[in-house]
Amino acid sequence: MIDRFAQLPRSLMEKTRFVRLGPSQVPALLAHPDWERPAPVMLWMHGRTVNKELDSGRYQRWLRAGIAACALDLPGHGERMVEGWDRPAQTLRVVSQMVGEIDGILEALADPVWSDAFDLDRMGIGGMSAGGMAALRRLCDPHPFACCAVEATTGWLERLYGECSPWGVAHDADAVRAMDAMGRLDRWRPIPLLALHARHDEVVPLELQAEFIERVRARTTDAGGDSSSVELVAFDRTDAQREHAGFGRFGAEAKSLQTEFLIRHLKPEANGGAGGEAQLGG
Image 1 (tube, one colour):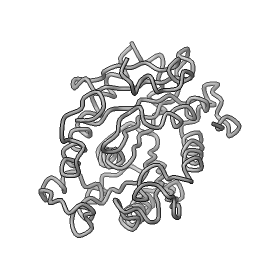
Image 2 (image 1 turned 90 degrees about the vertical axis):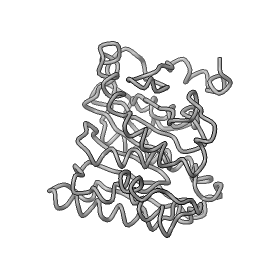
Image 3 (image 1 turned 45 degrees about the vertical axis):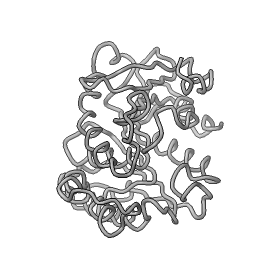
Image 4 (image 1 turned 180 degrees about the vertical axis):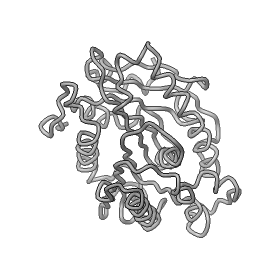
């Protein structure tokens, strides 16, 4: 067993299967509350430099709430590690490939092998940092997702990789535009969106995500949706590394907010799941 798998809590491992999904054989962690009946499912993508096994507490909270997890290794990460793909210069390459792989993963989850376990009519998408960029970009094309939850990310990549670039890395302008959700909001289908961020994030400045969220709210209103379903929560001085990943001393609060959001919009109680705040401890 790979060491990082062995580090997962036994209670999570008992409900988890490690598989490869889609034409690209994307390594996936599938966790289900009981593997006995269809459950709503969250498609989750981690950030650059880490892997899908990170933050097992997130998945445990979802399971206790009656929500399944499909966590993916980004291209060049985790089980499909490629030397150098975890560097800032490769972020757009990673995001672009991941966006292109999502439909194949959805088709794989619709296969009878998994369709009895996952209710794809109650499916969310989300991610952290680079994973969040992939989620937001995918939502600019037709999709089946019921809601989205992202952390420490932005959909305004033209600004992030222009004058606001935190790494001093030059990216091809056409590649940036291709992955920029902000420039495609005319295609955005309004769904509930929760964005969590640190006020002093040194990697993805809050103001970029705040402006993106405002544009999503405006798009939601124009399309006849409820702009109040688009939420941005910012934490002050988290003490996390570069104020970017995990939200430090606000980590538990962030996970609770996210899980409560998913309960509201994926409705696990519709299938007999726990679906209540009392189930969110740990």
